[in-house]
Amino acid sequence: MMGELTGFKVLMIALAFFGVVIGVNVIMAWQAVATFPGIEVRNSYEASQEFDAHKAAQDALGWTVEARYAGKVLEIEMTGPDGAPAEVASMVALVGWATSTRDDVTPEFTRNGAVYATPLDLPDGNWNIRLKAVAGNGAEFTRRIPLLISNGQG
Image (cartoon, rainbow, N blue to C red):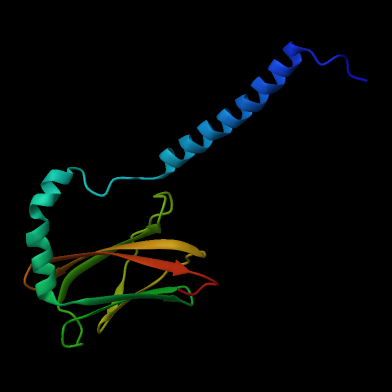
């Protein structure tokens, strides 16, 4: 049988309760900040000065990009305004979780017409493809393509 419930015991119970709550919140906040990259560009002012020209050059290309994932193969299809394969001089894609850089990969793609494909084992989840391509005329083309994979398909 417990003894008498005194003011000191109530204070210790309250401090223990709030200590646990605050401790868990601090740990969760620390983990959130430590695992999220958070940086899109190093200097937002410089990026803003080039944004309109960069966007106009991309829009002038008229490219359409689609990503698919099935059978442990990631495919990125890039077509021009006429539906034919886009005139791509070079292409690189960083594939990673939407909220962490821990599992980021930059796979090697093989091209077959408008489709770039690579074998890749991606578990179910919310993925981002950060695509950077250069057109035959030297214009840069960048896209962030969200890819939700569920039951091994995306």
